[in-house]
Length: 410
Ligand SMILES: Nc1ncnc2c1ncn2[C@@H]1O[C@H](COP(=O)(O)OP(=O)(O)OP(=O)(O)O)[C@@H](O)[C@H]1O
Ligand SMILES: [Mg+2]
Image (cartoon, rainbow, N blue to C red; front, side):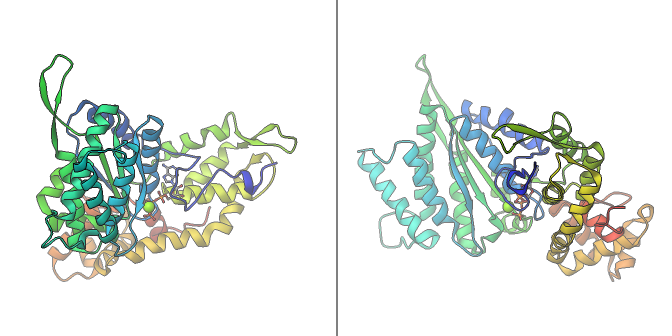
């Protein structure tokens, strides 16, 4: 008998979900490019993964971190920045833990001991740590120096050190953001000398992987103020909704052989989704990972039989609808007024007629250039629309909400 206790769907949790869909490109970027290159001492930029709420940014990097951890790497927890908090404190504390994993904490070397003390001070006072008058350098310098030591130890141990800073859009303090990006950026680009087995000396970069995740708004902040340096050192990926094929792939185990749950007598039994039930879930969630988990969870809980039917998906969805709508409304509500007017105008026009001038007129923009800037942001910064001769929606749930009777299942 299936019940809420063995429900594998987890809407709203940013840990790695049991039912995983897609993101193969990003996972492979880590597994096949970033990690092996870092281990070889080849330079790799940090990764900034941005996207609208609920697109799976945190989960993706937790999955990468999980892979790293299973490969024996040194991994920080998800360093979630609360609104307005000083990220230097969190990252300094996490780096001290990495140093601990690397065995640096027990070092007798005086220089290392002093360095650890300096970073401990940063973990307490953050970017505002006053250094004037004292002989110590700026907080970011101490942090970089310790990261370099961790990186050197990682070379010895043939491991990668992975740092994950989440909710980066919450860093509102310019100075703290600048210190953070410089500290991390300097560590990733640092070159150290190593001796090869034959005795030859070469220069290599450190095996340090940095992942920053958060809302697209971060790009404005970091992009505008830190300019070229940030862009050169970090590569930004804007997450798109998950493709229907990938969602179907994720649910394939439920169709055949079925999802294993324990039965009352301590054995296992299989819960199956009918093919129609799978199609219904995919149709409802429109590529949104959060809605996918939500629809799956409610379908599972709609009954206790060992087969999930389309009717159960529909019944479950009725109890999830309010939450589903709230999710999309939150995305719409976060948009600055012009951008919101733009997508709403776009939605009112028939799909084949969605051209910039037509949308601008429909939205009542006085100057065509306003429409240009607005649509560029919606495309390149947020990934909500795609410009072209014809404008289309990339955010399919937003499109469905604005142009159809979604969330109703026909
Ligand atoms: N690849 C995936 N396959 C299946 N479910 C996923 C996937 N990625 C994320 N999810 C689910 O989607 C929901 C949202 O994920 P997550 O919290 O990682 O998104 P986010 O982009 O970090 O959101 P926020 O902007 O609110 O922090 C979670 O319930 C998570 O389990
Ligand atoms: Mg998140």
